Image (cartoon, rainbow, N blue to C red; front, top):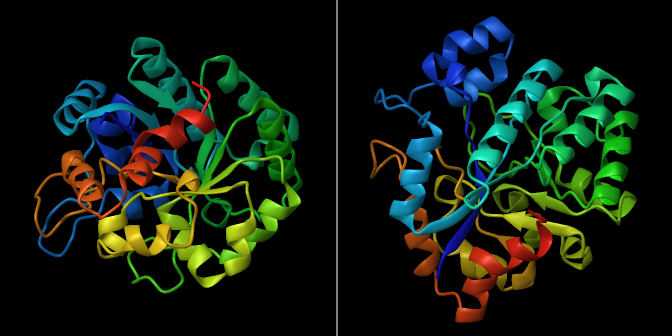
Length: 294
């Protein structure tokens, strides 16, 4: 069964050449803290593949298509540049790559909405990965609200970064209140939200969240956060139609096993997670084709 990976990051060549230096020059310290650091053993937290290397990793993992997610940059200019890069990637490989646009409300209402429309016109098919808490604006920010309304109109799913309140600490971690996401889903019922990283297990701790039909969840970085039992635990309470496979490549999610990121290993994990054939098909392919308009 060919897989669609709904949570992959990719950066322009200028970022890949010297990630820490680029971040310092562009005032993106939070991204640098998360993405350019090394673990205590000297191992890099993640890789910085080119488009060609990403396609090779996909082929090796049996991944037919990926959704490239933007980053929750601290500056609107970084968001716009990332969106233009993604537009080029999608034009070059429309059969393999889809992409979501990123944004920052600090650009102002008109400029932010214009960026969303421009990205949509260039073939980007969603928004995210966004993190208001990391970017320094509130969930009730009026520009952000206008974006969510426009996203519903344009049928653009919105991927939001979520951290589990009970998860371990790490450099750059920003707390995200789980209650914020249920309030957002209720306030914007026409908007489709994809909560990254299993939504911080939101529906397991808040049964009311399970009844919100516009909340979906991706599995990004799962091996860093939870044991393999999380697949069955989560799907025992959340309908299979609301879970999307995501690896968080090129983050190395198996640092005790791999020196370099390996997309194939997480594909193997979902296949051995004890899901039924119907659940597996929904999670690794069918749900993505239903809610994302490429």
